[in-house]
Amino acid sequence: MSEDTKRETTIVIDGRVLPGQLDEQIIRDVVHGFYAKIRSDVLLGPLFNKAIAPHDWPPHLTTMCDFWSSLMLRTGRYDGLPLPPHLTLPGLGEQHFRRWLGLFRATVNNLCPPEIAALFMERALRIAHSFRLALAHNRGESTLTIEPITAESL
Image 1 (cartoon, rainbow, N blue to C red):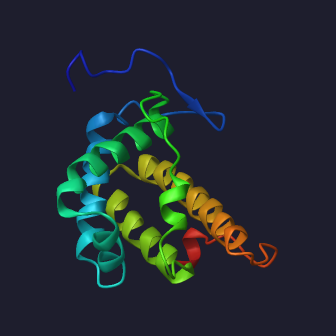
Image 2 (cartoon, rainbow, N blue to C red):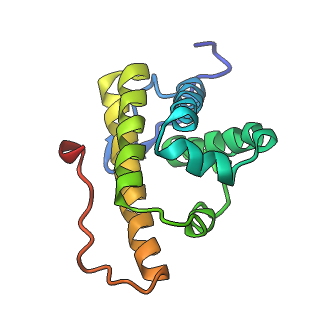
């Protein structure tokens, strides 16, 4: 890592100092690797490829890098609302989130040191649960029976 890309501040999330190896390159590798898996997946590919036109994938990947950079490195590069586009996806359900999490876990486990992979997965599991609750609420369904998906259950 060059001197230009090293973090100059210590980032603490959930009371833990982030590992120094977590940088923009890892985030980019994770985002691009993950969405490559998504686009070719039998279950998720059609859903994502219908929602995102081929020419919109490069800006989407940039936005997702900004999202994860803001989430993991506290860069503030993402100021959007990630939930609304997902609310319009018909039939989005638990099986989709389980596949999403499984592909994400495979990606981070392949590309990241274990400590960083675990941090990514903690965030992904929280996001999935939050989105599942919001989807149910938006559909007028009860949220009381929605249990978080755990890493162990994937």
